[in-house]
Image (cartoon, rainbow, N blue to C red; front, side, top):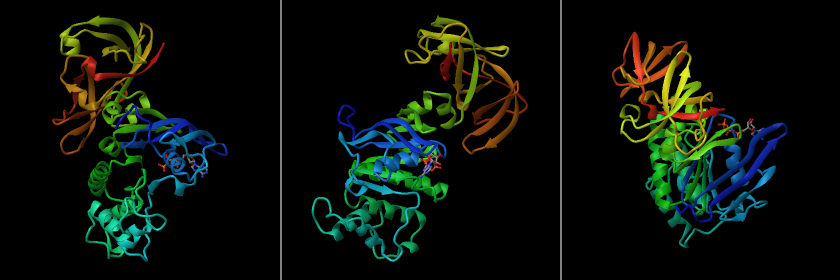
Length: 371
Ligand code: ATP
């Protein structure tokens, strides 16, 4: 993936309104050639509309869309070189599996020459259904049908593959297996793929870049690790995985090389943030906003992942009451009450009753600053 080359797909200030509803508002995205790019967000945030705009099933009310630097305004879906797999991937029941895949070739010649039959065989092998060409679709499992739909979309050799919640009808275990297969196929072909899901875990698991959408706009576009470790906003921090969010007033900003504060003895800027009667030391994120100019009197909102809270830690310690616990196998998610706030702890060894938990200043991540 070359981030300096012309993006495979670009959205430039795209807005799509339906009457009073703004489904997508002033959306700009750059999707590089060969990347797996995921749009994730809650129901109604504009994911499907964005995909339909890229496919050409909808026109933007404002803004432009480019493929490989060329505007596709007014270009109908069938001339956009996109393959689409929808949520409801509806295979043709009266055609065999092979004929379904071949249908993707009805309006075009197979890419790279060769016969339609050879192309169908090649694709069915790609999706691991080489033996199933003569079967009726309704004799296949949901996961197998989904792979046939993907093979059908890939048959004409599209430049871009669009997947709209393709696994939402399948059970959790199967989704996990299939997302790995989809990622493997995408990497084998090197095809630019735009994937829509409301499942944040799925988004983190398969993507090169994730756009976390909220109310028709992305709140953050970044690689999965950055989304998880350095969420740009409180919405991203709480939508993607569990998080503890605290807000308070900055009472001091200081620089420290105290190993107790940052663990490795390197210099670190710290804000002391008072939340009710407690004061927490929070490492400033560095050069990136919103922390660049933190000063006393500011209101800071920061978050700490439940797995970063440590039982019996003495830094940034608070004493809370365990209200419930969910056994999740490898870890337990423990619900805590601290001064009327619900906090979450993830641990292999769940405490009961009253517990003291703390966190390192560098495990706190600032998501908002109000001067
Ligand atoms: P979901 O995960 O539930 O599928 P989504 O993030 O894909 O949601 P969209 O389907 O893009 O969301 O819809 C975004 C908003 O635009 C919603 O408020 C929806 O009701 C509205 N909307 C979408 N299509 C239309 C339409 N054809 N006419 C009117 N409103 C629409």
